[in-house]
Image 1 (cartoon, one colour):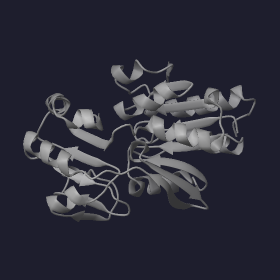
Image 2 (image 1 turned 60 degrees about the vertical axis):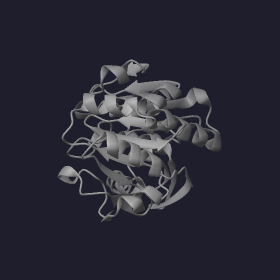
Image 3 (image 1 turned 135 degrees about the horizontal axis):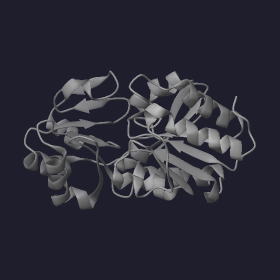
Length: 267
């Protein structure tokens, strides 16, 4: 295939009520036309699997943990093909002292390790274990999540930017006082570039659609980078195109446009 389409999950193809019929048509129509359609999410694999099931996405590829974990999906089964991990001890210590009351999650498959319960069950997956900071600190992981529910996003962001962690690791602050932390140099873009080379797709055939700060790298990387209508101005500024918001099927519009452009009629 000459085309690779990378889709973020939350705020891109999933509304709070799930994926719309038009999004499902887009994903399956592109795949049937021979395009490589893949999921590129900040979620851990445990949080991606139920989405793949809901999308009836049984064969293809998924990038989890913001590009740190490459997963092959075959016959509905997921296999980790490649994963970049780090030992989070030093950063946990630094952040815990700078952000009092922060809770931490770590994503070593197939477990999700927590320092304490997260507010409102915000962490995906069901297999959570509350462990000591010592165990969190010493366990290699592809991603650490930091959550400071009592702090506003701007203050949280400024504190993280002032710490060494923002120079020694990739730090993506979400819509709230939530941050994903990855190994330095690991982003959705690096994961997608490695997969593009593996699949032999030309760079000119790449499309990426997302809405969060963790999507900026892949939006810039793609030949055609698309920001969702609900994205912040910061994210939009990196995109070649801004589509409609998730609740208005913005990602579906992009997928159907690709099918039309490649002379494939939508189903």
